Amino acid sequence: MTTIKIDDKEYEIDSLPQEAKNQLASLQFVDNELAKLQAQMAAMQTARMAYAKALKEALPQFEGDTIKVS
Image (cartoon, rainbow, N blue to C red):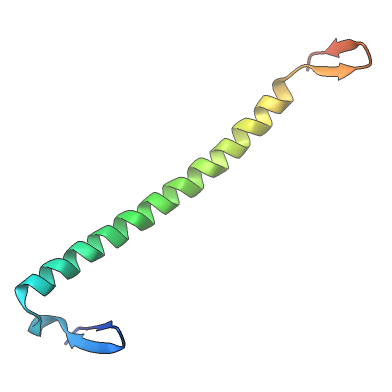
């Protein structure tokens, strides 16, 4: 049987009351959604760094009193 450990105590999932099973399912759903959001955030941070780098490269470069456009 499948068990879950909560606060150092193991429970057989099949023997849990329905309300506990519902709460467990909700908790698992939220954990999965948080994992997806964390992955999206990592991707967005990577994209942001790339866009910032590209912006810096696209800005005019100053050399003395003149502006050099790349």
